[in-house]
Amino acid sequence: MPFFSKIIKPLLALTLAAAVLSGAQGCFKDTKPMTESSAAATTAQPAAKPGEPRTIALSVTEKGYEPSPISLKQGEPVKLVLTRTTDNTCATEIILDEYNINTPLPLNQPVEVTFTPNKTGKLVYGCAMGKMLSGVFMVE
Image 1 (cartoon, rainbow, N blue to C red):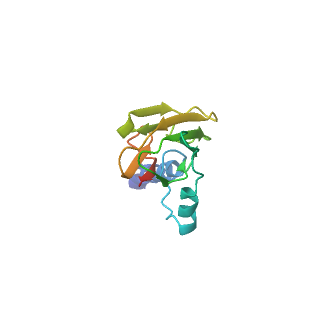
Image 2 (image 1 turned 120 degrees about the vertical axis):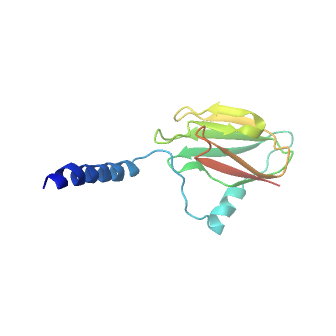
Image 3 (image 1 turned 60 degrees about the vertical axis):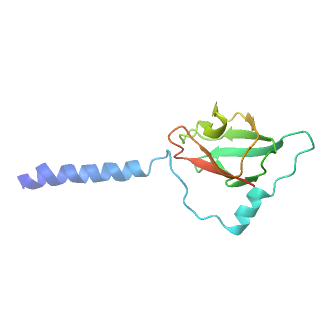
């Protein structure tokens, strides 16, 4: 029995601790595939008035930046209105490297970020932890 007490019990305790910690909230990426209807919903945004940036509301939830992906047009100014609704995330700011954007997102306070996409393609933004939580703009 000494072998069981010295080796197996600590291993069982570590396994239990790992199981508990893996269920904890924090940075994670929702890996559910996007359906056609949810993809269409993220692209159906009202057009901006002439001379004004297109306004897009984004929420930062336990699932990440929502909605995503969002379609943008090259050369069309965009105003993001981001609201972080949870403390159970590492996404406490938005990082958009290509446009030198690193803006804190205080809890439950809308924050505006404005930029104009200057090239087409996939534009990834996310948290400061290497964009572990991220969102995508598809620039046409």
